[in-house]
Length: 110
Image (cartoon, rainbow, N blue to C red; front, top):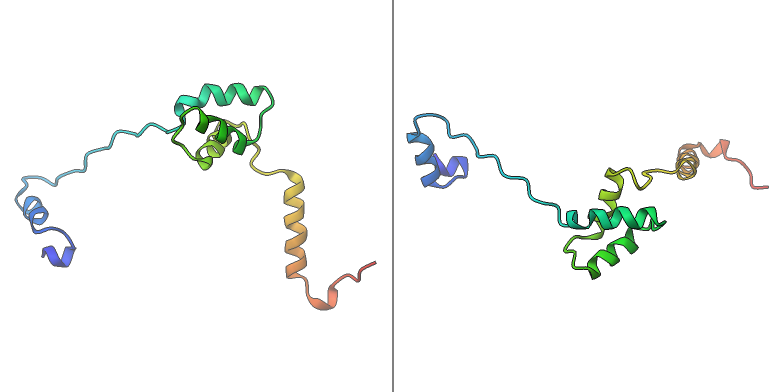
């Protein structure tokens, strides 16, 4: 049975002899690696520092173990960094139209 379930025989034995179904323990949430720098990031944002890569480098120098993606996502979740700009969306729409247009309907270059 253990081999079929891809579990240890000891685990199967524990489950088989348990009086009730053993529920999984809920894990405690792990603290975010850059949580200690949230106030600093907020302050720098208000001073005009909107570049997540630069903010990441600054907190790395201050001892952060986090990575760029954590800084970028924390800025997004706080509503500090824009997720999409309208200009970028229009570019993607034009590119999508370019790739889906039939060859006979292509515009000639002027």
